[in-house]
Image 1 (spheres, rainbow, N blue to C red):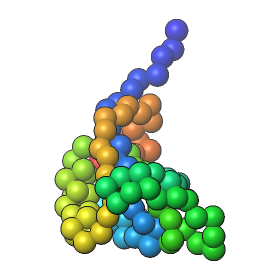
Image 2 (image 1 turned 180 degrees about the vertical axis):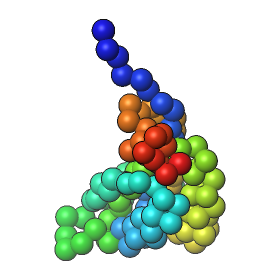
Image 3 (image 1 turned 90 degrees about the horizontal axis):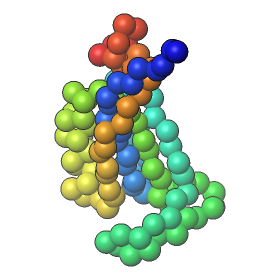
Image 4 (image 1 turned 30 degrees about the vertical axis):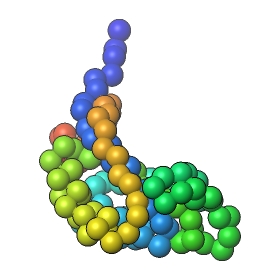
Amino acid sequence: MNTLTLYPMKEIRVVVSGDHKSFVTELFDRVHATGYTIIGNISGKGHHGVREAHFMFSDQESLVMIMTVVPEEKVSPILAGLRPLFDRHSGVMFVGDVTVSRREYFGEGPQGKG
């Protein structure tokens, strides 16, 4: 029976105001994350109270979540790049362990850049 092989990676989720979306995506591009997913118009409750989704003209007035999966060696540069943003603005970041079946899609392996 053929089975998939799984490889360890790190998932980074960043939740920020929509007007900081490009800061995060440009950082992910600079560290050569091979891709990311953006979920817009999200709601939540945190230190600054409840933030409701705004289905208005743009996502700059609401929260967005930007997610990427990277090899572990790219986590520190991403954390360092996010520090100035979180020093001045609200937002949260989560880093977790994940496994992937196609590591070459995430910058490692025979066809990756890692």
